[in-house]
Length: 200
Image (cartoon, rainbow, N blue to C red; front, side, top):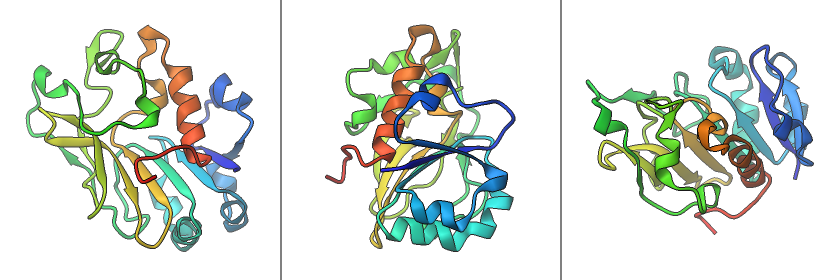
């Protein structure tokens, strides 16, 4: 299944992404309805221009209705599809609030110690500082603040398709000091290409 890696900034894609067999790297300025009609997966990063992407909202809905998968990194600001709601930050977070709790097993995190994703270069908070509210029927995967803030969730839409929401900096850039970024990037792309999911 062909997966669009949407390039929304000036940096090129990581080498792991560029080498992945299913990856179709497209700049956001070039993304079209035709691209979405020809893809089965979509990965968007934190720099995504959500205002500009609103113009493709019907095409994104249709992409998902056909069974597409969307891995969304970052904070929801605009209603890009029905069911998404604006990011809700944690109020006055303290260091322990950034400790993660695995709420459901997911293939993207299989075999990865959760503590290795809590900091980048020894600093906590990069993984997430709140949550994109879960639509009805979504499954929480990772929680902050004692598991009460679902920073990661997966949603099998009633109309078709699946959305994985990671409400923080790009998940594929986590665990840098443990060398986990390339593994996470590969697993994200594999999931977007139709790999195992909690809804299976």
